Amino acid sequence: MLLTSAASTENKGKRGRTERRAEVRHAKPHDFDGIMQIENSCFPGELAYSREQMRRLVFRANSITLVEEGEDSLRGYLTMLMRRNSDLANLETIGVLPDYQGEGVGTRLLTEAERKLMDMGMRRFRLEVSAGNKQAIAMYQRAGYNITDIIPEYYIHDHHGTRTAFRMEKILD
Image 1: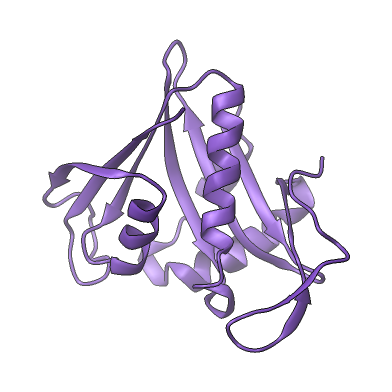
Image 2: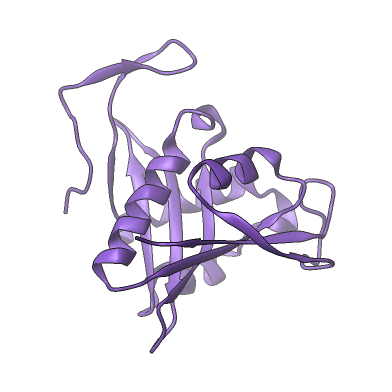
């Protein structure tokens, strides 16, 4: 299913490369190795999900994983979990290849996730982000998310120099 496409439209990325726009779509089983490559490039060592953990997360019944695919490879992914009998969904993980960070991949994935959630009748989208991840926090705030809680010692290992997370939430409308 094609969610976003402009195959004939080209643009210049921040690195000056001319590319066709990417497509945001549901992840398929053959995307798994690409998702793991992105996961390991964004979350080194013990911060990354294991293959087993990620496989369960990506392909379980109450989750949706979206990917952005360029001409030749995946650029990013996003996995969200839905709560049964609730209007709340949680952004479990999002990753963008370092070469594409800052080029709108995360924003496009987030926007499409919100659209899908609204189509499903969800009203709230929540996430936790490292208090030290300034780039991600800024993206979420631009997208309309507000910090609702500060959670000390949220992470087992340091993320961006801290174990503290911000809980952020957006009312979908």
